[in-house]
Length: 466
Image 1: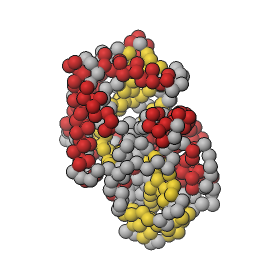
Image 2: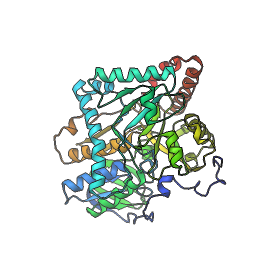
Image 3: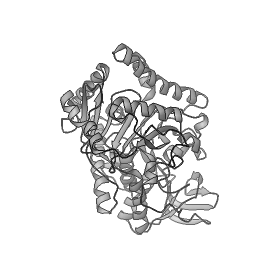
Image 4: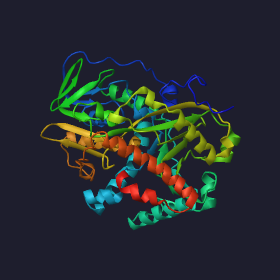
């Protein structure tokens, strides 16, 4: 059968994602807010940032009155639609983090991210959340001479920071293809610090857990603005000493936050379940997540029910930071993803795609995620994960717990704490710049396929893309 890439070809097309379609939960919205209420902590957004924050606060102090406000339903956004990588990746480089603090601080952030992967796995197990987790690590293929140079440079840079083979290592062709048999593989890098999971099962399970701990979640309650001591909605206000912004890709919809984070779309396709013989041809026996060393990001995983989920960037940024349901689907991008997948794994030619979807992720101007609390106003925030949020949200939740409770800990001293990214440029400058950057990465990969050398274009635009 061919690839179903139009809304008439598959009954699942109009659903939010494969993950939403295969989670064992009741999607009936929880009751919305009706009138003003008082709380100790108000959290805006019931994605992973908001729910992890609620989880750790409720665990630390069961007497806290915690209210979570969600415009749709818990897990509606990127937390329930992402590629299912719980990794130690942080969007800013160690060099950037060292500039915020120092070398030790940058390495502390990296260690915290590595620990966070295990923390997510441990909490899911302890709380009985069956998120189909498999910690197989990540393999990043090098499929050209230029990509192989980048792979070797990445490992050499890791060694300069004191990161050893237990952190990241270089694989030759035979070692790489023993894990993942991608076409034209030259070698790869591998890190153990990633778990493949079912993100909607994680976020929905976490919502149930925090409710059992006494947290109130109001769904279908859109917050229009955040102010000191107050979260404003059309149905009433939540008055709280601490108000946490946990809105990520939807942040631009809040009054006064239009240039804080831009929503950039990442799109994903999922195949039908593949046969054991097909998986023998592909690999991923331990459900390793995978990518390659191209410039325009792609990512994939083998699901617990033996589908292949594959996503990537390339969808346009929309003028004015607009987010609309129709932006979740782009036939041209889906077709390119399918072509890329078949190029990687020719055995998949003709395999049916059962689900295709997308969603907005949040990008700060300097590509550096941050978390913090302004003690004068009581306004807290976390976000700007640039697509690396499944794990980073957990670190944010634990850090916000310590900040809200006034504790000085190793987490509150990490370099991303209190960082303030500059505002994005006004329109149409940011529309022009972001889309030019996305286009440049596509052209950079094309350039390398022709020249077989590292892209000159990619080097030129790298400072603009974080």
